[in-house]
Amino acid sequence: MARKVIYQFVDDIDQTPFEEGEGETVSFSLDGKDYEIDLNSKNADKLRSHLNRYVEAGTKVGKGSKSSKGSVSSVGKRTDLAEVRAWAKSNGHTLSDRGRIPSAILDAYDAAN
Image (cartoon, rainbow, N blue to C red):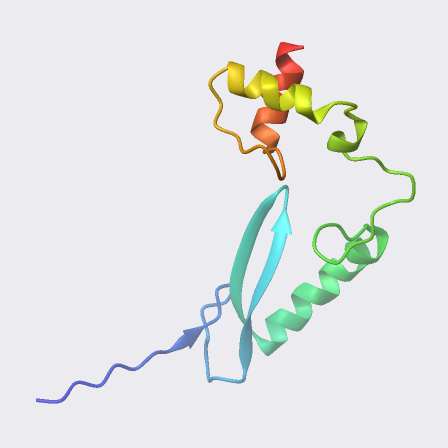
């Protein structure tokens, strides 16, 4: 006996079915949480239209964004990373002698000093 599995695309807003190519999965983020929603072309356009005002007024962050001039990372503020490494090892943290110091260790060092 043969089996045939049929996938049906359904708009998450109005529950209407649509064919492949007549809709899309739209990804967006709000309040630090990422979301995906399956929408037919009409509802995807409507979502983008509603959000356009906010997107244009907002500032793009994350991958591909430019950092401001003169910004300094928390690591750049430290004068002695060797001291951080020594503190981490003496407090039971596993850390290599070279490379990036994990932010959790930097945060723990800041809290202790």
